[in-house]
Image (cartoon, rainbow, N blue to C red):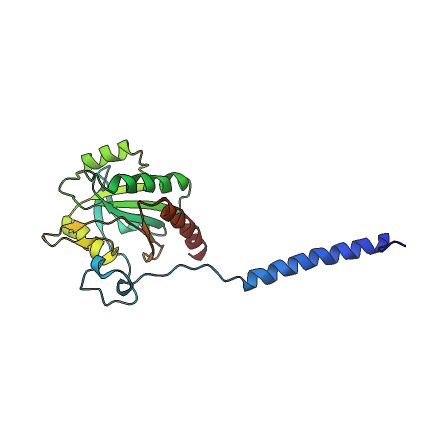
Length: 221
């Protein structure tokens, strides 16, 4: 005796399909939504934060700015409106961590080259050395795509304040005069100009994490 007659096969198949759909919907409802933190000054290593904002626990965003990129163009915060971007601090004559950071930032550039939602921004911590011409040479030698990645120079005090009061990314130089000790940090910034992640720009594993977090952030924004 057959367990199933032919006329029983169709209802059983329909039931199996609907069961699979129901289980998938149920799983998607129960699965926790991936989120990223919004970093505030009070949550970040105090060495990287200006004392004037170290107490802040909410509403922190990247301040407005006006700097010059490798093509001599003025770049303001408006360039990054409605964009997710990755920022860091470097200088072109650095021979320690900067070459590794630049190589890894280029990896991010290359992987997201066709994603118009994502941009990159690197600030020079030695703007007195990193002229437009110097930045352009650096951009060419490192195969930087001008449409995707701005290298910026400009007023030293402004860059210092961005580093310490906006991006929470560099250590203060005890010698003063708006000098900075840059770090290996990459910062992930959302469309509301909020910090959503810090990453060690010298580590391949951290670049993978950054790329994963960008995909999460794209779904959240």
